[in-house]
Length: 573
Image (cartoon, rainbow, N blue to C red):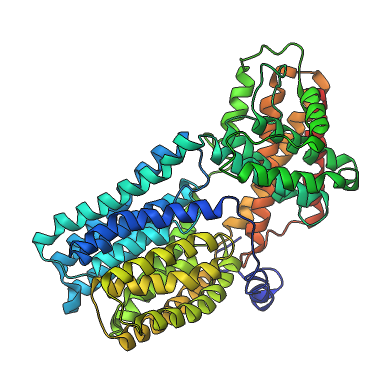
């Protein structure tokens, strides 16, 4: 499709489709949210409170910026969380270090070239952070928190002598966040895996009783296997040689998921309440060894017997199964190059943050970096439709958050009380943001304002004025950038995903015909990954101005064919 050609149906129809705010206020289920929020709050409190009590409130701000490390990797198992968060901690510290060094050299508060350099640097950091977080598949606020840390530091006014203490404070906050994120390994080393399996059980239960869909359930079950470092279906051996409730429940989830592709879902609907109850038991970190519900013992036993192979060597896995696990854990890429898919969102982020920051500078708006951060927050999305939803969520959330900030600042709290309020806001932010971004913004707004007030106290009226105007400017610029940076890569992704799904189904049919059982685990994992990519690609393209231009019936037929083959592959195994 040539650049900037009008999509089929015209621009007006495409705009109406992608700008629909439907779903902006929907709530999502999140497993283990309270425990994660508590960990995030402690990560902020532990380094910040001693610094404030010792009279170094300015350094407490940088320690809390480093503590934002805890925002990342909330669902990763400990074996992966450690190295990932170590890299994030270094990146967060580097953002603070680079921002502080730039502020000391450029003096952005004086305006002129120094302020312009800071705007350009924020745009560059926004784009790089977005590209890196998407490439590493790190969810959550991701790039926005890296940009926030850099922007706060870059818009300060430190003396060169203050650089090392600020960097050290950020490194301390990041290190404590890493330690807290890994501390759970001493109490419940498999808790992240249990949360992943609990999410899969919930998703399958929703599918069975009609409140969910197959695509979401498939993603949840594959993520559970990914967390467990396994591949569906598990080559289960005898009960005394394959311990692990999580693995057995993942196999049950897979069995119900693919079984419902051929049989009516009502055949399994009676299991939905028990799946949800089992999920709650798994998610409870206080239970060191959660028991299997009696109502699920027979289905679990049947699923394990279904997947078992008499010739399987207990304790070992074939090369094909190891390759299948690699496919599901993301060590191998999908069928098409992801470069273009990564570049366009990063480009949008660069333009949005740069233009919003430049306009704020031209308008002489105090705390102009808030405009850049607001634009980046809107653009921290997968498509234009999600950006529009983020714009609605951020507008409503900012309005409510400003009211909270006004109420707190009207009390003229001391620095110690400010830190305690910030810690409480961080808990509420992390508890709610994964459920709905707009609810998170309600608490993110006063958190950012109070951090700014702690770093450089100013009048409440000026602070709220700058935040309100900066948010409106950034949201508007972000939404315009999402609309104007048009491309057809999402449509191309759907075409490639459909072709890859067809290839995977053809290989599966050939394997079933020729009885090549040793290749079945990898073929099954390949097919499962292909059908998930097909649904994800179609969803992303539906949110862009350019639709995929593929008959939805073809996509539905390819998806149904893939699920039926997954069921046949599992029965063959």
